[in-house]
Image (cartoon, rainbow, N blue to C red):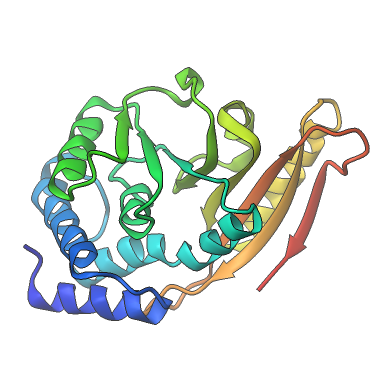
Length: 239
């Protein structure tokens, strides 16, 4: 199990985000942290340990929950299926699956040993009924999802086409990002591609606050639009 300090930091951070976790949810987070600590030296899952592991990875993943909750509500509650692309160590997919107890998740990871880690992590956290691990390249995924997340993955313009192919009608891509100026550049590149295609993207950037982290973090929300007359990329900001 993680040491007492890590567990306390995790609980304090969850409360600071405004989440009300049950004992079972905190136990699942503890089990997940322990699994990362056990296998990180072998698989090099994340470049952090101790407090940094909790803050930069667990709390960073969970900091998006309030925004995602509002997104789901705005869609009338019809969004049920998440996909975490390039899941790696299960971030943000596993923390989000712990937070959203009524939703199904698919963790897509192409590397065999990391997919094996994910299956172990899903088992020890008690998520096997709702979380599937799919070892595949993004281009090989055939299912459709309401919300597609990714973190520390390729630039948006490099994968938006493949992500668009797995996004259900009315679905949203939720990309964890850091610097605003980098996101604007990526969106500009998407706009250039959209001008010659049939799929347009409406975007919104939402700042998120990660407890104990003194660095900017945000979600870039992308909604696929096909209707004639939609602007290719409409960049707006929300707090």
